[in-house]
Length: 303
Image (cartoon, rainbow, N blue to C red):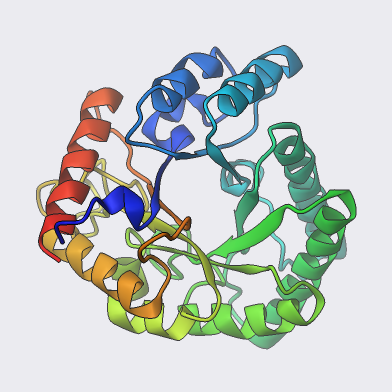
């Protein structure tokens, strides 16, 4: 497509994946946030916890000055603490809910518009009960978020048997949950990630068509699932075209084509399509980001 892709979407990036040293919330996070904000290719950024209040204030100031569309990722907080929003143990489930409530508080401090999170692990049995518990947890979180402002929640769908082994999981199951939550919170939606689709055993067309009425955020990236001994194996989000991996220009082009078809992106759209890419081994974050931008430009030109 010859028209400038920036007129059809807001291009974003998951900061804490591109710069994984920031994932735990420590260190000079503002320095790498500033790298993204000063790159005018990007109008969106997703950050996660910033543990030091002074550093958090500095990050918030940079993001506001840069006029960025801000997302907050609660996924690292849940994963690092083994938080399970669908746990059969009431105490464990409440702990996970409280972790996300803390993330919601920080999201408001950073003036984020949207917060992403994930389900807990897929149980060995009684999946229906787990789905209901997850739905109950999300409704509680939605009510908490809405009591403080207009933060939009987005449930990201993951793999259910390769790496994270999440309850959600299949995009069809995600839609079932979203239908129930939207009775209480009509703004709630789903986050689909091109990186996860090969692990979910779904094509871009199948997944996006299933979720078309519920998708409120999109990630683009890659995965490697051929050899468990490779450092990029699983949900590691290697660069596009990583040797033996699943996604490159062709797959990204198809994903964008279906996003256009379902109306998630289009002329004048302000919806975010965000890179989720991570350096492997000694790769440079800056190089991986630059390669990702070139990949998107090439895929867009093929539409």
